[in-house]
Image 1 (cartoon, rainbow, N blue to C red):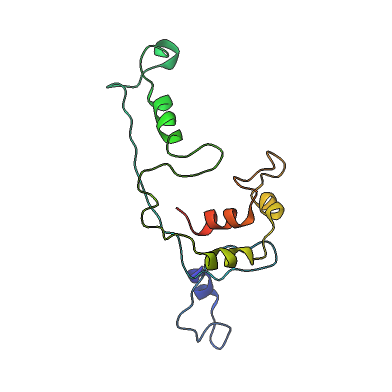
Image 2: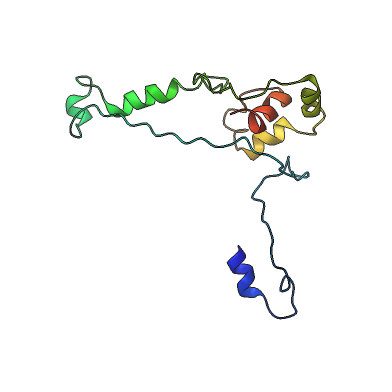
Length: 147
């Protein structure tokens, strides 16, 4: 983005005398209300490797005979999240997350947010018509607060 603007800058033109600018790659809260981000939940990266043999094996020949890395990996990954709720099941993941205060909960309750609009923007409306919660506060907390 910066390179594109710098390429277009001409003496005495828009942004030519600007020394610094910040682009916030964020979203809006619905279609009509922008967000000002003042904190993030953080990031965690993990690597998981599964090896079931010294070489690749053909599942059409050995499927059901030996452990298959793909199905074992899917099983392991599925065990990390509670089905239907999205709750992370990794021990200790919530240890550094502060408890929700009543004051904080009220802040979430006062936010103008439309669950139906969220379904449409996530493109789930015509497929399942479901989010992991039907409660606005839970959806917002899962999106902004919890790991």
